[in-house]
Figure 1 (spheres, rainbow, N blue to C red):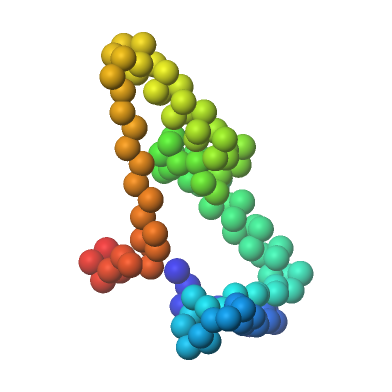
Figure 2: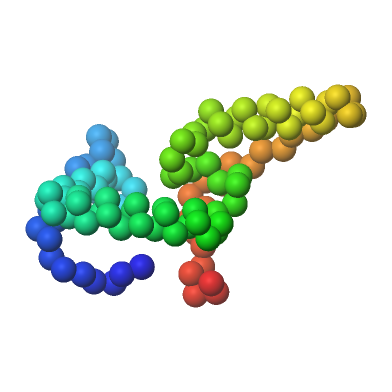
Length: 112
């Protein structure tokens, strides 16, 4: 990630959530307003990175988030088909789902 970059006139504001302690970051809503040039630059970089990831096959086919023409509906349909096929082969089928709350923020980046 970039540690610094050109100042493009980005404005940010912190909107406090109702009935919350403002001493904690999770108790505010950050709002970022980009100027037009920043939006164009962001779109260009996003399109270029998406193209490179696609042609070099760097994303797993099971990655549904943040990809064009893929959604949670597609992911759920894939799970449904997998379970249906598994039940045809073996009537005893199990699905385990793990919801890891705030997992990204708890990763130790120093070991990566």
